[in-house]
Image 1 (tube, helix red, strand yellow):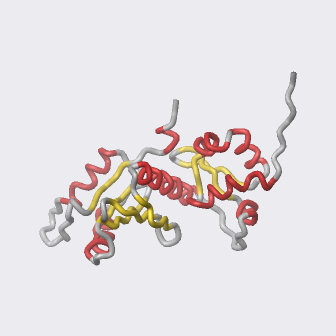
Image 2 (cartoon, one colour):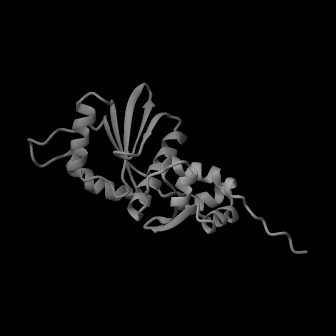
Image 3 (tube, helix red, strand yellow):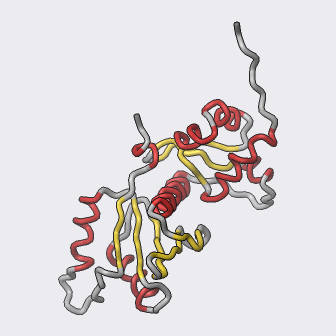
Amino acid sequence: MTGPIKVFLTEAFMPLLKELDIFGAMFRAEADQQFGADFVAAALARKVCGELETSYGQVVVLSARGRILLGYTGYYAATRQSAEANVCLRDAYLNIRQAGYEVIEVQRKRRNAVIFMKDGKKVIALVNPGGYHRSVARNVYRSEILSGKFDELHLYSYQSANEIRNSSELLFNPIDPSAQTIDATRLFLYSIVPWPETHSG
């Protein structure tokens, strides 16, 4: 016997919209698992959220209509670049929480960052899917660690472990003897895997 067609009221999509609002985006595969594929498909059809293709998989973002439902008045349209940055931030946050650390704050406006406590130390984790050039890493280390704002700096990206090792060699062992020395006990580099890859199969 054929079952009835399920119709969702607009208000029913609020849990999904609120979840998207935390980080600005989430992978379609994760949204499907958390809320149900039919539910996410209905939300997309109702245009309360949109979908973007990125280098790491399909990503669900807030639409203009979804933003209005959440009470936002200013116009904003997510781009592929912002979607990639936001799902990377979400994955880094989940990685930090799964490690058992206490998250103090998630920053998304000026930069994508997670501030948390680790064994009594205040840590700032910066997130960029494509990784950080060593000059940028040095500048951040100077402004966040040498200034005394934080005890440790963690840099998260979707780069592979080998890519990070190769690119960071000159960060910790600079050719220029006048370059800022980096304390390897205060700067840590992390390779995280996009959510769909860790949950495939």
